[in-house]
Image (cartoon, rainbow, N blue to C red; front, side):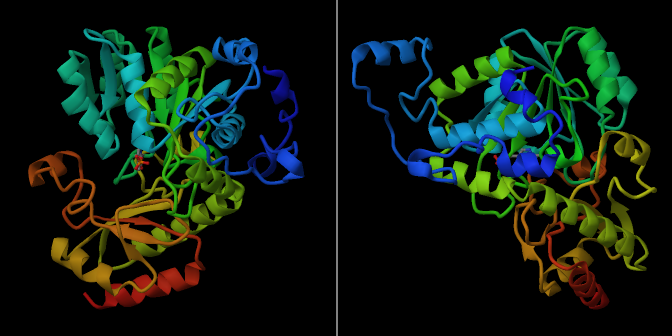
Length: 398
Ligand SMILES: *Cc1c(COP(=O)(O)O)cnc(C)c1O
């Protein structure tokens, strides 16, 4: 354990979200993290500059490498995830691509699942094969098949749970154990859960990564990504990123820090609201099926209960009236945006067929278990009575 971490050992997550990396005062006694909006950091003598460049002394040199505002965001996430180290990125996809390109070389193998985030699955299917990386994507619900592929040998096991848009659940402990028995590095995309709902590092993951653009920032006003985990691995990924250049901007880092302070409050409310809406929709005569890991009808509800504190703010549901019905419901919602996003304080709905899965064929969507009428809903932190009343009136119009 790092010396700094002793201080946080018995501190709860809401307190960590507010105070971690910010207990000391900043320049001139500033209590809040300043936005250090400058490119470079000067030195008064060459010896100090040389020592910082050789990493013999701590310090900042150039903002493509790191910057004091980014450092606070990274340190907050490191503490929230219980990790040894963390490094940040301009977007979630930058975190994912930099991690995969750091860890994988030609003729190495990665095992993952078919339901990863759309951009991630593009990296698996389009980019990595160009560099002769062997990519095996398994059926997300078939743990035995995933384990068989891991047992054949691989450098990296890449997991994501819950998944988009049908909220499938992977058994983290089981798959991490199998991966480690085979000497593989385990990476978990924890974007949907956040460290409030799920702690992959406690379950043994080597690296956990996020699109900070979603629930971590939480207000749909800043993009970012972060990777937390084992020090030696994070150091390699940081090195790739500082050269590759997908660096987080100081203004975005500030907005993400500000969002993180309310993480516990927001996620508790997202969890409660999504759970209530899921139960309401499940009983609605026009709804065909609701996908939410907090429902007892979810096929991996027991695993979700074991590894998650809450079930998150995202759910999806299909309508009996097919795609036409879905197209007619969304414009009638008064308190929901039709947009490609999730994890914000405002409720947002979209149809995977026209959004995340627009490039797939109906047959491919069927294979992934995505009905044509599926609506994905990221439930905000509004008052749930208003959200349910809004869905009631919109559903009554179809
Ligand atoms: C949005 C998202 C990403 C990509 O993040 P960006 O910040 O948009 O680049 C990756 N994984 C998951 C699960 C996401 O929802």
